[in-house]
Length: 136
View 1 (cartoon, one colour):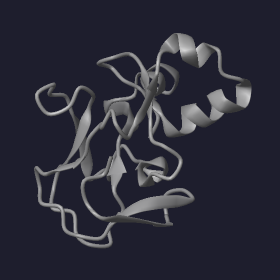
View 2: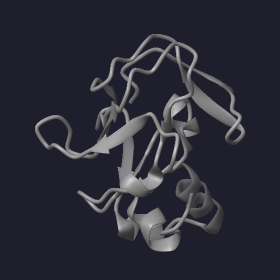
View 3: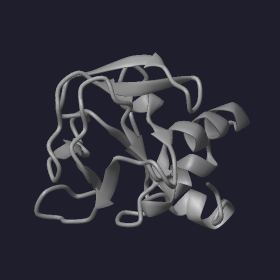
View 4: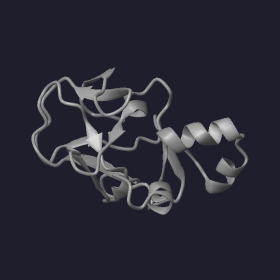
């Protein structure tokens, strides 16, 4: 769940993206897993999904390197539109169970109002690491 005010807008990267509406200072936690808000299912539950549900989950979710579960946002959540870049990401994945039971994201530099929030899926998504290890 994003911890800062964000908006969904057209992205130059792909389709829609998440844009910050207030400055995020370097080192601040911008998104973290909230079990009361964010969703998760086991690998076994994933296998029981139909083809379309699996396709959608592969696009919007990730396999956690911590719990090995699929983690994904509810459909009305802005995180649904978080885009990837291996070179211009401004949020970095962090692993610290004292902060969150799953990976969370900190600003790796000051992120200014109006900027798109971008992560590198290869930092935290076991599915992408396995299926697209050289993805950019």
